[in-house]
Image (cartoon, rainbow, N blue to C red; front, side):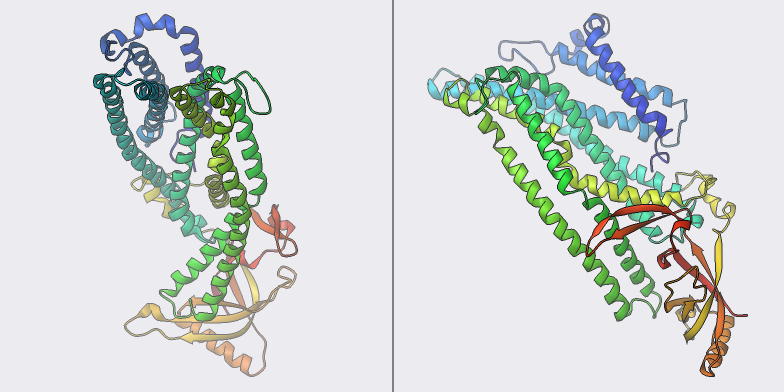
Length: 543
């Protein structure tokens, strides 16, 4: 999932965290000392004027952005030489660029928070004392924020374009990493969905969650000190009294409560979503087979497949109902928290309207960052479900699997010849009946041979029951089947050899209680009987 795109993920991601910590240490300890030597502030900064005494792009911000850009792209240099992959410019340089933009956007939000404070104080002054504020002052505020937002919007639009291409490249890398080993894993139930759909969803969800997490951390770094400072203007909290950094503690306690609440009520949802994808894959597969085969997608089978889909969706809907009750109740209650916390200060007129807006905005930024898990819980549920499916898919790839990560990779183009067919097993089956469909003259693929049989090996398959399998039309097999049917008509017992793929390694199954799923377990193949769903018949032969 990761090594197809990123260089040596077990080293790359810890190195990124370590480098971030080093860069932050250098900034806070040596930043002021390095500024006179390295900063381009004196050249690029906008100088303060009477009309704009605190410009956005001042000397301090020039040095901050310069340092962040240098630190980010210096991290890319070693990976140009160590474990470099064909996706280096996207996975390494692209990731750094996207994160740099996230940081820039957080800084914009911090500046806007200050701007709102000054702007609303200006409005309060203008409304309470006519003609004390000039139009030049008023429109000066508007013009300043307009310029900053135009730059911000331009960068965000370009970053959205970069994000779209970034995600597609990651999906492309994963797709052909799996397709290089397709011959070994194509027999797994839902293999096509793993490659076509799960790779797309995984890259999208991981990137979105990752950027949201980074944005939340950066927002906390920027806004926590600001909110702590602003909390000094709050006289007291209702029912509690004066508290240092009061609003920070309110935001933190609220976020912890919401996270624990939703994690508790939503603990079963990842397993249910995973199981739901399995029945969806089975239904989709039956319909795909029905496009070319008359014996598939018939009313009885479609009814049964769809009833399984319906049963699982209804169970998922029920569990999401109580989850959503807790989720929406918490989110609505959290909306009123700052109003409640600020109530004594508002009643005593201890703060101005501009300061109220500034506190309100800062509290919202900190609170939303603290409750990252609350806001992202449904996405996390989907991610866990996708991860489980892809991890199970990867576990069936051979240890010496082929590494390729693009459609023009030579390793991928020659993979089919290099891979051996996956191991198969053969077992005796008790032939019961069959239906032979001769192919049409103008449609050679329209024929088929549907066979009904039981497993003869009751020790290995103790719960064997009549099974149905359709094989591609073959004249030799058709003749053998007709001969077998004549023997069955005359009362003889007919056995045949069934060859099948069996998914190796490990099995995931659900432990069912009375009417509900209690959990999941993962056991080795030898500890339970082989379930039928893990067998894919290939061909049938008669002695």
